[in-house]
Image: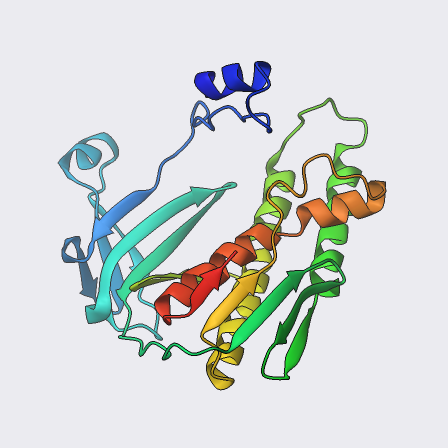
Length: 260
C-alpha cells in the first residue's frame, strides 16, 4: 500500500490505492473444521471445542442440525463465518466431474448495463437480455433504509440494524468455485442475483454450443463517473464486476474461452 501510494503521488499510478482492511478490535475470524473433526450424532453435527474451552466455559462441543439435502460423507470441510453480527456455516463438498464443451468458432458477446444488466449477442443469430431492474430496486430499497437510519447521525455511524440491512443485501445463496462448491442455508439477494445470472449465461452457452465468451469491460469504469447523482449511485452499486468474475470462473470449469 505504501509503495502504491508513493506511485500515485508521483502520478505514476492512475488510481488511488485503498488501505488494507485490517480486522477491527474485537473482530472475529473464520473457523475451519476438516470433515474428520466433525461427527454425526442423532441427526446433528458435533463440533468439538477443545480442552481449553472446556476449562474456561464448561463446554467441550456444540451441535448443529445436519442439512437434509446434503450427504454427510461427501462433505470435505466445514467453515463457520462471522459476518455483520451473524454466524454462517459453509459446507465444502467435492464437485462432480464436468464435461468441457468442445472448442468451436461460436462466440457470445456480453455488454453490461443498468436497466439491461446483461445484453448477450452471439454470431449464431441468437441473443438474450437479463433485466437489471430487480437489482436496481433492491439497491434503491437498501439506500432508502440506510439513509433513514443515518439521518441526524454523525459521519461513520454504524449499528446492528445497519449491519443487518447490509447483510440482507449482500447475503450469500450459494457460490461455486472450480472443483468445489459452497452452500450456506440463508435467504439470497445480491450474490443470488449474481449466481443466477451467471448460471443462466453458462447454461445458454451450453445449449447453443458456444465455446467463446467476450465480456466488454472498461477497467475502473466506475471511478469518477458522472451520469447524475441518482444514476451514479445505482450504477456504482450494481455488482457487475463480481458477475464478470463469476462468469469467468464458470467458463473455466466448462472449458469455455473467456475474453475480457
